[in-house]
Length: 143
Image (tube, rainbow, N blue to C red):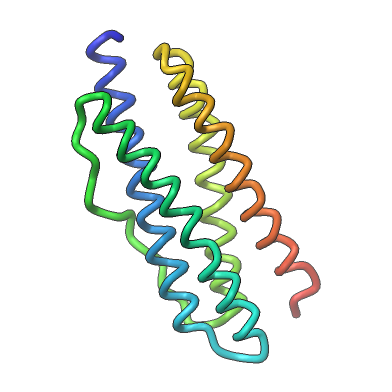
């Protein structure tokens, strides 16, 4: 792989890794902070998302290291909100942005000759799409 292509892929994968770390922190904070009539359901939902996000972070960190890079240890800043509906909306916005990035990253990995990484993104995109859809359904009809 061309050095310039590899360096760009590494930089972009670290952006993705920072986003996964953000998701882990966001979901943990929201699970702890959520209040109101939907607390139990939302707490369980937010907590249940953490293992998927950690798995995505593992995939990214392992690939960054395999390509000779250093995985970031710094998350993208977390948007902290106090109201339950705002938590769901903020999480939805993050999932939508993640999907957009991963669609681009999948194509980038394939163009770089990293077919295995491209295939990994297919699996990660399935997970992220499920998260997005669930969050959208939660917001439907919410006053």
